[in-house]
Image (cartoon, rainbow, N blue to C red; front, side, top):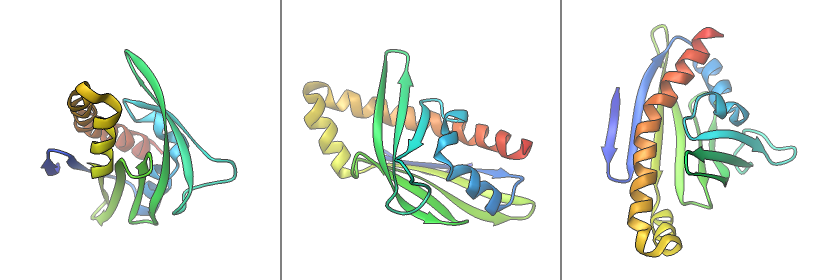
Length: 158
């Protein structure tokens, strides 16, 4: 179910036969992201950290032509309603919102390329900055429905 679309913002929802508490426990466990993300293959908390506002973690991303790591900080941890983080000190915001529905939860995944990220990509990549932004935008927009379908499968198998 499409929620919102703009050039640098995207969100999509899926209904999952799991309670908001169960689903929140799943999506806030960033060590499991590799089970459902088409790009982010692994995440790990900084030593002793966990799903709380201010916590930091590292993610390893893979595409056919490259592998890279990112640093992210949790910016919302409101169980069982919202879990979100920002990548690279405010370049990109990713998050999940959870809404109870009859028989389960409506899970929405959202992505926003923030102004600092757009400026950062343009500065980092120079002449190919716009192409790099377009690549990351396309990956987010194609990856969200894949991620949601995989989370649903994992959650409903539990």
